[in-house]
Length: 159
Image (cartoon, rainbow, N blue to C red; front, top):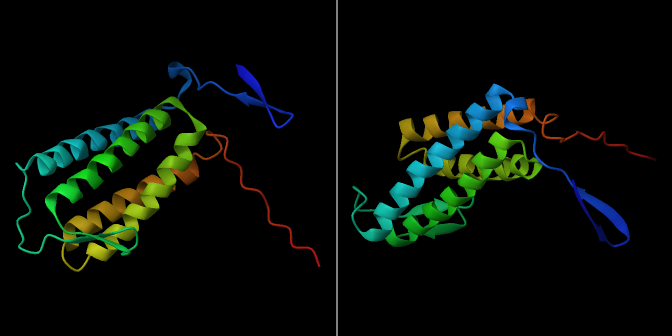
């Protein structure tokens, strides 16, 4: 265990659980996220290198809740590569039991669901599959939150 001083409070960095103590479902979900990140990285590299092309003439995509529009293969490939690196970190952390990976996996999953909802009219089947997978990951994260040390604190409203 590592400890250091920060603002006169002792902060302890807790090591992850040993691999043999990790639940099987955490390993499975972590490696699933890791492998999907690898596939996304390959797609991003194909788009950036110019080998991969969009099939439709309209190749723009709305991201970040529809606030940003990506209009070329190069910028879309860079976006996919950045997201895949984030998923590499999340997948490794979820498989090893790091607390930060719980938060890092929850936030992009919510963002990806919103992105796919924006794409639902154009790509109904693919969007529904991705939305269901991400909802499953979010449900699993909520189910396993105590394992990662995430506790729900009650909201106290005082008069």
